Amino acid sequence: MSMTPGERVLRADAERNRRRLLDAAEALFSERGLDVGVAEIAERAGVGRGTLFRNFPSKEDLIAAIVVERMGEAVDRGRGLLDARDPGEALFEFLAEIAGRQQLDRALFEAVADAWLANDEIRAAHAGVVGVLGELLGRAQAAGAVREDIGAMDVLMLLKGVCEAASAFAHIDSEIVPRHLDLLRAAIRADPAQQALRGRAPTLADIERTLTQPANVAGGAR
Amino acid sequence: MSMTPGERVLRADAERNRRRLLDAAEALFSERGLDVGVAEIAERAGVGRGTLFRNFPSKEDLIAAIVVERMGEAVDRGRGLLDARDPGEALFEFLAEIAGRQQLDRALFEAVADAWLANDEIRAAHAGVVGVLGELLGRAQAAGAVREDIGAMDVLMLLKGVCEAASAFAHIDSEIVPRHLDLLRAAIRADPAQQALRGRAPTLADIERTLTQPANVAGGAR
DNA sequence: ACCTGAACACCGTTCAAGT
DNA sequence: ACCTGAACACCGTTCAAGT
Image 1: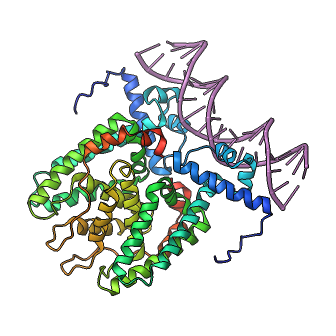
Image 2: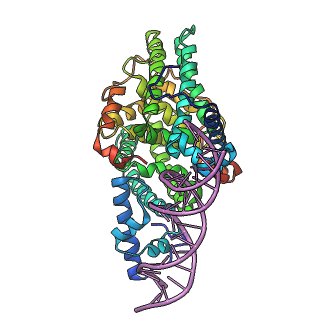
């Protein structure tokens, strides 16, 4: 729980309404996808439409708030795995858990690429995820389980690929996610006969630079 | 050019309008993403709004028509690579070309997961892509360049992951796509020390089954 | 047979009135 | 300070009138 500057104290009923809106939205998004109307979300939460927009300036901000919560949970889980016996297994368990959650409500991960460009809190939470992932990765590399020429952002991009590409099949083929996690494993495992990768490992600084790039700000996203 | 039953002959001006709409939509989608308004598309094409909906029952169908064209081009390119000297290199060149095109207008690939569930023509075009990819893959496997326990749909899912995960960075880091294509290569290359994959290779029949699954039809997509 | 644009429906967002 | 719901703006879609 870090103290972000923008966190004012809310009146008791306001705090409760905010929580209800988040729960209602999360439930509805999981059930029927991201395009459920705000009217229905407000109704399920038992508040007026205006209250929703008082707590979240736009529907996208509401989605972003849920994503931020999920990322926070992921960070906590990652921290818990930092002192595991086998660093290689710890890394892959972390990845499997994230993929498993996204499988339940895949719509949320879809929104990330768009939302983090606009939303500061998502960027911060995302940096947290990259942080723990980097630590887990570093330990796995030090143990000789994972190739050295790869970074946390590389792994996160591969994981996002697993989540999104496999999401359409998750309901019919329950083993598609484990299968593609195995392929991810094959891609990044240490191997004496491996070929060098082109380019260099992307970093968080690259994201910052992407945000100031006019091509993306203008509306390249979505 | 197969003869699909639904292809009636259009009057000359109608055919021209359809072409103009596709070109206008493709240009605008590439420039500013998938949420440009139909009004602007119709205006750029020089026709009324109604004409757009006469040619394409919905905006989603317009997007689908463009995706179908792209997939057709990909199939043509894949056929041209079938008699290459090195089957392994032919496969990876095919994958690199598809990834390179999607990099230009990433929004289109994003729409596929949603659209193919609804649109029959996309399913047909998709099957064509899987078909050539399967042939290229089979040759690469026969040549000993790629592991045997993998299917065309596996490779396509990995490729989609490369396209989507890397799309946010393509503008700032020009080598992110080649880099992740190298990782894909590492994942699927034949390797005596490789671990077995969980599950089995997904097939087109699995997609058909997914479509009849109520969970997805109801609104799991999007 | 096809084209057009006014009209409709829907949904995210705002805001004046209320407590 | 916060809540509410009627009103607004926007955009995909339809359809009666026109050629």
